[in-house]
Length: 92
Image 1 (cartoon, rainbow, N blue to C red):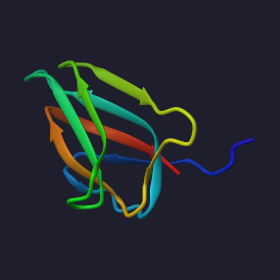
Image 2 (image 1 turned 90 degrees about the horizontal axis):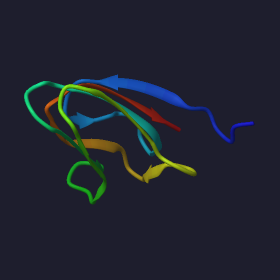
Image 3 (image 1 turned 90 degrees about the vertical axis):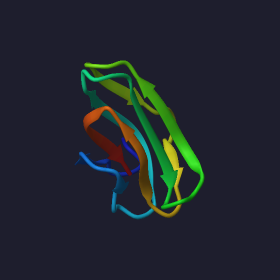
C-alpha cells in the first residue's frame, strides 16, 4: 500500500511546476535530436539545486528516484531544460 498519492504533470517549459511543496518520485524525459539534454531542478526560483541530470540526445529516458524521492520544500522549479522536448514529473 502506498503511503501517499502520486500525481503527474507534463511540462514543456522552464519555471515553476506550480505544485507547491512536493517530492519528485520519477522523471520521464524526451530529448531532442539536437544534442545532449540537461535538466536542473531547484527548490523554488533561485533556491539550491536539488536534482541535476544529463541525458543522451534523441531518446526517451525514465529516472526513478528511490525511497521517498527528492523533497522540494517550496516548489519544484525547472531551472535548466536544455534540448528537452517534453517531460513528465511524477510527484507526491
